[in-house]
Amino acid sequence: MNTHTTPKPIKLAIEGLDSSSHSSLANGYNNLAMIQLKQGRFEEALANFERTLQIELAIGNMLDIAVTYNNIGG
Image (cartoon, rainbow, N blue to C red; front, side, top):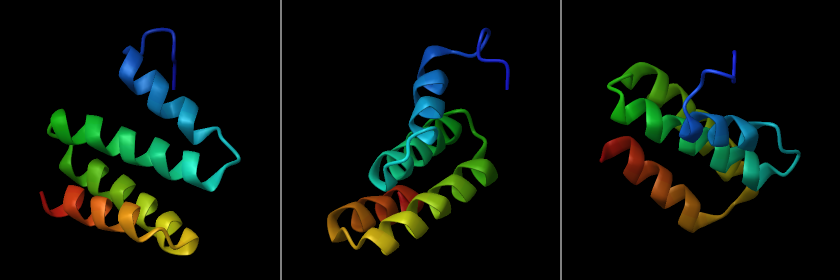
């Protein structure tokens, strides 16, 4: 992806995907999904919410899991 012409919110979400921290990685996928959701790119958003959820389930943070389920259904 060419980040020179990419809007700033998407750049920030992509930067989160480069992290080695599982929490940061989940946050990056969630942020990207939220942007895609607002853009009407529902299938892409759902795929990234599901990636977020997989990481959060592995970490076991129940609050983040609940928030992601809310984002998927909300």
